[in-house]
Image 1 (tube, helix red, strand yellow):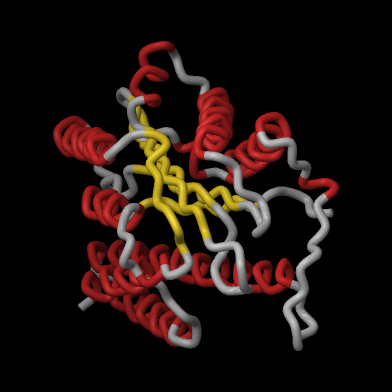
Image 2 (cartoon, rainbow, N blue to C red):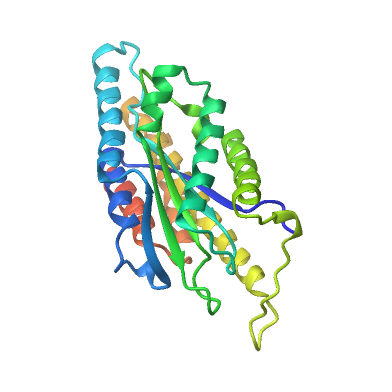
Amino acid sequence: MIKNWTVTTQPVRLGTDGVMMRERYLLNKTHANHKHTEALISIFGCAETSNRIALAGEQFRLNQHLYNRKGGRPLSSYAMEYCLTLPKGYKPTADQWRSIVKDCCLALSKLCKLNKSEFAQYRQQIRAVLHQQAQAGIKGSGDHVHLIIGKVVGNRVLKELQQKKATKVIKQAFNQSALKHVGIDHRIYEPVEVEKGRRLSTWQYQHQKATEALEIEKQIKQMQTQCDKWLTAKEEGNDRQKRRQENRLLKTYESLKNHPLSTQQIEQIQSIKNIIR
């Protein structure tokens, strides 16, 4: 038995560049992360959807600059990405995944309390790609969907999408929808495959890797926060605070060097390093 099917979340940073980087990644058959991926299938949206997400973000940033007299940090994340993952052994069809993603998106829209016009735009800013994985061996994850949802709708940012309650809502929706459309129940799931010659079950191994991945994302988010504080200190001419954040950034960076990083994570770290040079 497990508490939920796996859902990981992260903001898509770096504005338009970040959105387009994710679009390229999702359908890149030759990417190092896709060695064990058998098929990449678009189930919602297309490249034009990512363009709409980026355009909405850029328009919001422009309006911030033109009309927000109070100043404030410009919006840097135009979308949220959710990765819905099933253990190996479960292979829903593309249509079943489409139904699951639809239910998850509807649940999130209710959380955000969208009006009719906002919901119409929200629907146009949903990008989802299914990665069907090889089921043999312990390497690679199970089948999963990368779901990207634009955060800018109308004249507001859907801050709820990045909050913990959104993660809770989408996990519940994923659990219920997988049971409804595929007939699989996380509450009765038991890992059965054991890797020969080792004590860890396949599920334990995957959980260990997922935990490590979450720790990496946590530290990258910490680096981003430290970078934001460094920028604020620079603007205010606070040299003491600048040095403090530089030391913290260095410490976090040294810790991240001990983990295996994806291309996107390396690019995120490099972008932070470029800012403080």
